[in-house]
Amino acid sequence: MTTAAIAPGLSATVSHTVTEADTAAALGSGDLATPQLLAWCEAATCRAVRDVLTPDRTTVGSRVSLTHERPSPVGAQVLVRAGVVQVDGRLVRYEVVAEHADGTVIGHGEVTRVVVD
Image 1 (cartoon, rainbow, N blue to C red):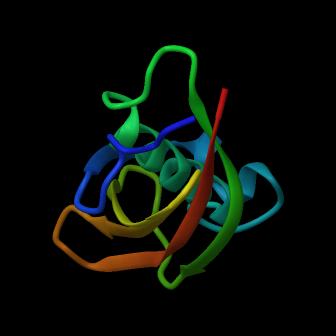
Image 2: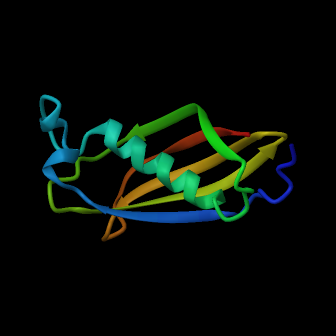
């Protein structure tokens, strides 16, 4: 299996508007739930490489380090950027940053995914 088409610099941005279903309140308390923010980060990592993977390949998560620094109320727009920073065989490491539409960083971290058939 080759990952030659995946290279540092590939990136993607996804945009979401926080809804009631995205809140920690839906799970028990608070504003934007950290698990939802993580899901959006994962979605951005997948989007960053989807155009260079062959149809028989995908990536699966293997490691996450995410800091969720600020709340995002219902109605807030959240932009999540993911960029490939390292490729080591089948392992692909991404830097992720989540921010409000005004540029305020609400979370950041690293996601490692593995290319699989």
